[in-house]
Image 1: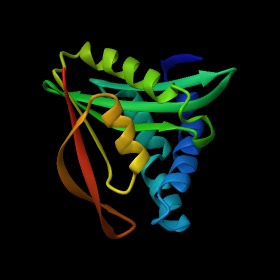
Image 2: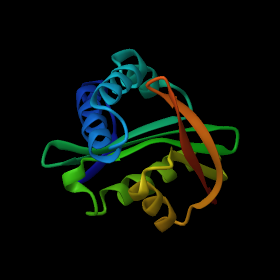
Image 3: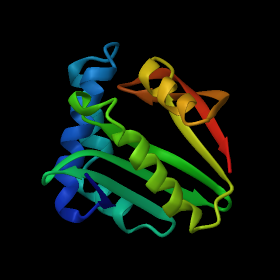
Image 4: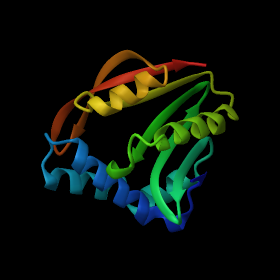
Length: 160
């Protein structure tokens, strides 16, 4: 498996993995809400902007020519945020997410990051276990609007 910077040609794979993972993870969201959210958050313009923004890293995990996961992080000042971290459901618990996290952390530390945050929907038990297993601590709560409804999210922080 190779962890590499994402390229423009990876956009469809990123959308596919996000869509597949959301449908598998967020049972409380309707299929329509998930599809609309993915179309909005992972459109070509949004992904192209993510791939080119300064202080940003978008990485893919590729296995035998297939993209099986991706991570997206950004640094502002000394704080880094994990914006996206997805691995295809059939490939989870194989160390792919950990490998993506380690490489993302290395890449973001190049921008002098001293603190790393991750935000996830509170209903994502697997995500919470993943971040806690990496040493993140739950440090806050928030809300995000998805499909016209407010959803509870949790904030995790890792001091570097």
